[in-house]
Length: 176
Image (cartoon, rainbow, N blue to C red; front, side, top):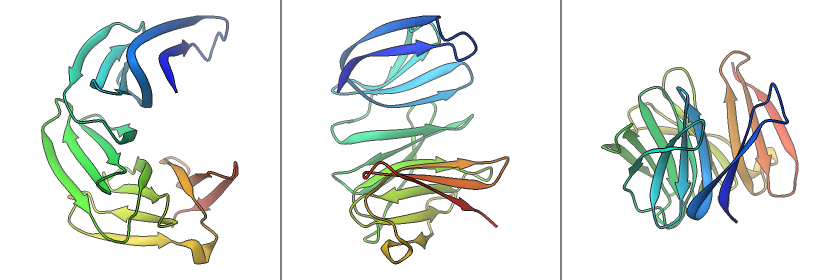
């Protein structure tokens, strides 16, 4: 756990900026020259790339550790309530998804149609939630070898899903 961020320019790795936060920092997402950071007991803090706080989106982040963004939406998971949330960039709730098939939802990623890939850490699965939050489909389970998945990234250009696991391994899947 950390109460600060380090911003690194990947083109010039020597250029770093340390940004102190009021409490532990959890998930982070980048969108349109802004960082969206989950800060414990504070909410989603929106910063510019210099670490200046632009605003704070007031949500209960007590068990929120994962976040992703698109140009007009913020998505996050709440592990205690087993829910996936979709809201506007100002924090206005659009939909909340809850299904017994997902336990301890963790990492999440969004495709070009705003469908959401989410991994269930203790349900050992990868689920695709429809863009409106109404329907879902389990894509992979422990029968496919998933054991404690914690992170997911969907590469829109290559149509590849990358899953990260607690046991320090990765798996790649081609989406057709």
